[in-house]
Amino acid sequence: MKDVGFGMTVQDANAKDLVELYRLSNEMNMEFATASLHNSFYFVEAKNIIKDRPMVAKEFESLINELLKSNSPKKWFRAYFNHGLINYIYGQKRLLPCDMAFDTFFIDPYGDVMPCNGTKEKEVMGNLNETNWDTLWSSEQADKVRQKVRHCDRQCWMIGSVSPAMHKYIWVPATWVIKHKFLRYFKDNKYSMYENKICRDYRDGKVTKEELDKLSTCDINGEISDGLSEKSRQQLINKTGEEIVDADIKAQNIRKA
Ligand code: SF4
Image 1: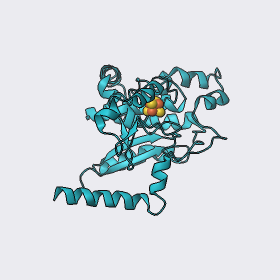
Image 2: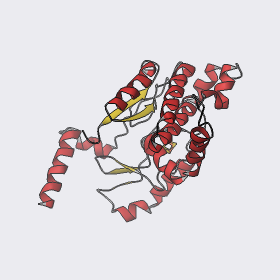
Image 3: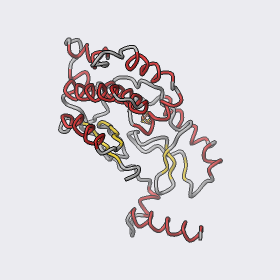
Image 4: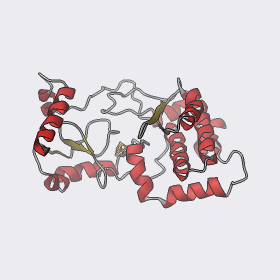
């Protein structure tokens, strides 16, 4: 089957399945994508957190070594992405800058344009049902959201924002790949999670679990917002989101015909 693959949101409860699932997807000739827990309006969640970071990071380390062993350049770059996930679950600064809202954006089914799906509250640059694209993209509101992105401290590491950054700052992952794939060509295990200073600091007791928890976006008392604007909520009074999307697709097909 084309363009079908496995996706796994790695957390304490399923981390031990990570490498097995990767091997299975390989046997089935399928893509294997990973993520870890995030909190945001989009996920309607504020309390997600990894509890046993070293255990989860160790599983990512094994996956990274499997990916680096392969002959596929795509997998070597996926190894870098997973290295970034270890960095993320320890609450560290993103390995690459985030330029969402500058050269990438999200649109929801109601026409709201946003920088990404990782913010705590929904950040709307404008709505395509009210404004045309060029006006929206160069509006004052869009610039306000861009300023927030420049000061965003959520440090998320999801493929939606990382993939454009990996292309834009290609020399960073490329240098990492050269170092781990080629300079360690004859080594069985080319990568260690303890290359990350924060992993060593935690192992050596220089930083506590509580300190790491504070660096995460988990907010136990946080109010969870589903991010819907008042206008979007109004549209849902008599219809479901699926009905709105189905009607829109039908209207587009009629226009095309
Ligand atoms: S780091 Fe970037 S992708 Fe993540 S929430 Fe902030 S702006 Fe969005």
